[in-house]
Length: 171
Image (tube, rainbow, N blue to C red; front, side):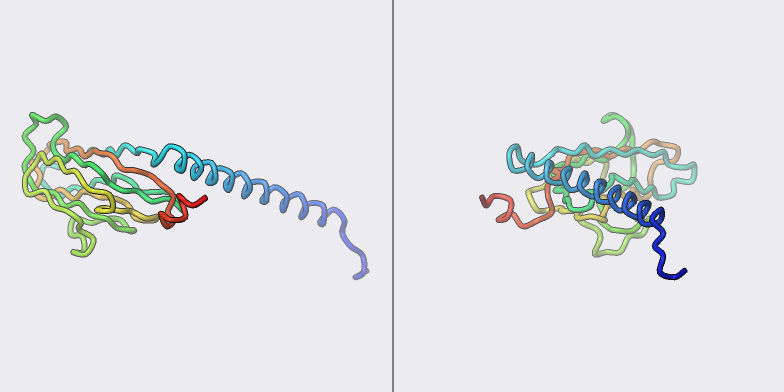
């Protein structure tokens, strides 16, 4: 009969819907907790780290330092690029690149935010100078590296809610 209602199906549908809503509520509670922590203590510090060895031919290397989660943004504050140790001989130059796709050894010019003409390089950035919004990542492209040498990049970023500053501090 077409007028009959399958109660088992409706029950399963209700259970699945309830489970989905619970997951959404947990995610929203997590986001609200992060925003409350930001308003109370300020941005969360994020350690940026990546390393990779060059091949024997000295082809360009791309290091992915990551990017912010959905609804968050990163302000990059410090970067150090070079060999594994300060005393390491690490030839080449480096481009600091932001982008939402996978970086290549020849990134588009608008994605390049800074350049290191020699290595090692230590850079400090002002608030708002390098801002990453999801899904963007921070990449380091090392051109003409020393063959069979491990290169490393590290630094620090501030993780905070991706919303207007005025909304963060209004009560």
